[in-house]
Amino acid sequence: MSTRRVILLLSGSLRSGSSNETVLRTVRSVAPAGVRTVLYGGLATLPHFNPDDDAEPLPEPVAALRAAIDEADAVLVCTPEYAGTLPGAFKNLLDWTVGGTEICDKPTAWVNAAAPGRGQGAEATLRTVFGYTGADIVEPACVRITVDRNAVDAEGVITDPGAREQLGQVLGLLTGRAAQIERGQGDAAAAHPARGGGRQR
Image 1 (cartoon, one colour):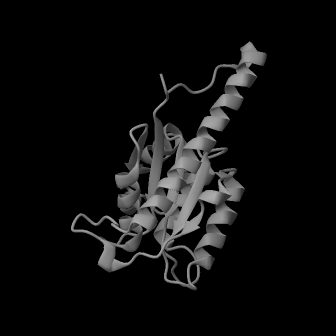
Image 2: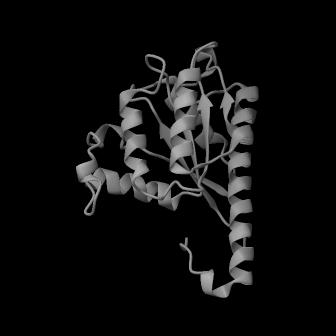
Image 3: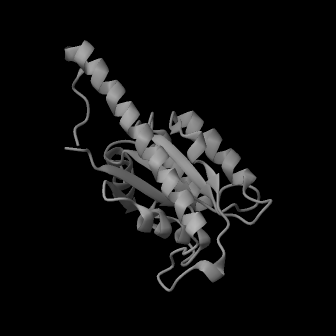
């Protein structure tokens, strides 16, 4: 029986109907039967990061965020750029991931939906933070997509076949990397049975 992959979708925008939300809704619509996408909706409820609060028991929204990351096989981000870097709310989310190990070695990528010539600052910050937390950045899955509002339907989903195909390829790269990691862990557990007690799904 094949394993069903879980991809956590993180939007860096709080604005309803943003291009970032449109991209992630489209990702959900192109996901094949063997992939379940989970769109995280708790960005606005996260408290301001305070190292004093990064201890058990964690604030409930933080515990929920970390649990969502832990339960996913891979993470896909779509965030706007603000003042040359990430929006404060999304950087706050990433700050809350630093104290945990959930994203370490997790296949991770981002889609840049900014206007042409923009978004590089946000990408650079994502690369820095994900590198610091040990996320497994899947480089070929980090892509740029221009959202043409004339090619978005009433459900907020991109209808352009080329964009949909590109997002489908992103999912394929992430799930492929997750499967590769799982096979490697399985090989290690077979070679060293005493080390085989990993997280179960």
